[in-house]
Image (cartoon, rainbow, N blue to C red; front, top):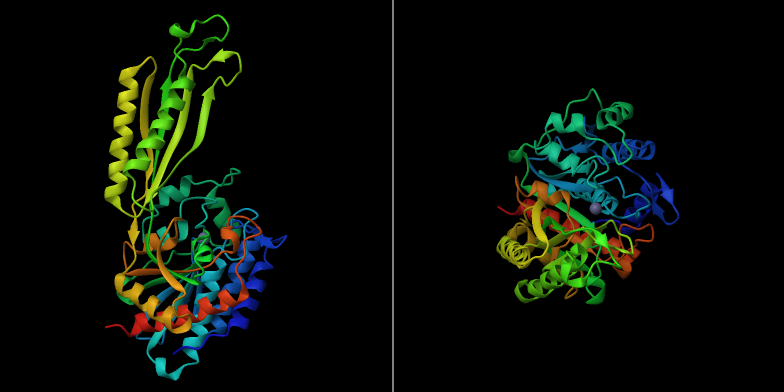
Amino acid sequence: MPKTDGERVVADLKRLADFGRYKTGVHRPTYSAEDIASRQWLAEKFAEAGLDPVIDGIGNVIGRNPSASRRLLVGSHSETQPHGGWLDGALGVIYALEAARAFAADPTLAGLGVETIAWADEEGHYGNMLGSRSFTDTLPEAEIDQATSRDGKRLRDALADAGYGGRAREYLDPGRYVGYFEAHIEQGGTLEATGRRIGIVEGIIGNWNYWVTVTGEQNHAGTTEMRRRKDAAAALVRLAARIHDRFAEIAGPRTVWTIGRILVDPNAPSIVPGRAEMQVQFRDTDTEILARLERALDELIAEADRAGPCAVASVPISKSEPALMDPGFQAAIEAAAERHAPGLHMRMPSGAGHDAQILARRVPSAMLFVPSINGVSHHWSEDTSEADIALGAQVFADAAAAMLRRE
Ligand SMILES: [Zn+2]
């Protein structure tokens, strides 16, 4: 069994957090000076662990393992959200590094090895999961040409400035790996609330989004009689309430839905609104449930449109497919968790998106979660206890060995 060193893991996480430190968190956007320096540091750490590091044309840092005959790809992303936490992404990268060191030190694992990876831009500073999509060959050159950051910098310029511009991109050879394994902080409060220390991810949710537009008639709020009004905001609020009620009746046990963005035009206190818009989003790991909610949404919108006096229409914005994690890998994580933390683990969906959902389309994939204190993430105060960080590293390496031994 590979033996990990929890103190070394915590020390490396703290060192990585020095690149762009912000309060107790980190500000390290993709291709910023801090991000480029941290990728160089990771490449050096991968080399110290006996791997051959490559930083490719999109900024993925890969620790190639030339000696193993069976390989597992392990890692996560290394950039952060703006003023984000020190563990989101970083945890999975350092667990991967520690697994490589633990494997190298264990002669019983001869022939079995991990290849490490720090993905570029999972957090979407320039695009949607650029690194893992590049690696699985679903990021066309044309998209790289067109992509810009939130503050208008072109992706091509960012890659050139980073020194990655002229480099080849590395691509997945599915035959090279038994699969992909990623550790991550939970970013929610389920593990903490139930007193568990390890989460075994069953699937990563699909996230479906729609833009709903209600068109009425803008008019004077003092002189327009109620019976003559076409109040778009009133119609939208009624529709929103019906959506919430209907979804509650037909959702699955873990479905979540949100109307998080509402616009009213002209948004003035003494004008009957002529137009109102909202974004409806729902997430689940079950495509049938997602499809059921979509049908219900379409029906409610058609009903509201027929009822008048306002016109109601919707367009889909984006629909990401759920990704199921490999059942055999889930069993390997569960067995390792039971060995190191008996009874303190649970199976759960991932409500957030991860690179593993991209890899799962090509190779068997798995994810392990450790608890997030108070369920906080995407904020500089995000944290996990050092004991949970150390435990997670050991369960990760142990499960990785079991995945590699599996016939
Ligand atoms: Zn993340």
